Image 1 (cartoon, helix red, strand yellow):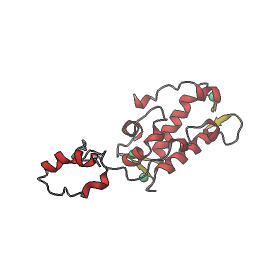
Image 2 (tube, helix red, strand yellow):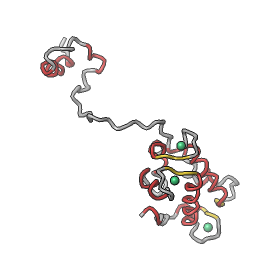
Image 3 (spheres, helix red, strand yellow):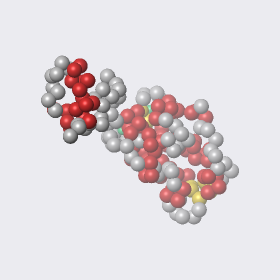
Image 4 (cartoon, protein in one colour):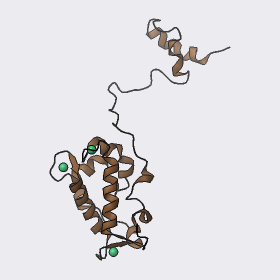
Length: 171
Ligand SMILES: [Ca+2]
Ligand SMILES: [Ca+2]
Ligand SMILES: [Ca+2]
């Protein structure tokens, strides 16, 4: 039987001067090139598992409209913003640091397409590298005001679905 794995591994074995080439690498499988371009210094893994974007409390009009009256009040919006903060604060220390924001990046990209670092730069008003709940809520209050185009203190469905003006801090 012709073993593709043996064929692929042969040049590597030569390079390794035949050390460690007695089949120990079988578990990597014949189709995984051992010389794949893995960076010498791997990027640090996020400390926590990313939260699925479908769970972002700020992504669903109906989810935010707790009273089901067809509009989102500032209180309902604030509740969603606080829930999102608590979901991302996986260390439960009352701050969102960059690693936590990166772990939540799949959700955050729905917030006006802001990437974690850009969001941190825009929202971290005291520049300590992390977001407190009050910094986060101030940002979301600004965002609520932008979405509430007619300024009546409620986001109706048309305002929700309209393109939102960019956040001034994020330019
Ligand atoms: Ca935290
Ligand atoms: Ca801060
Ligand atoms: Ca409105």
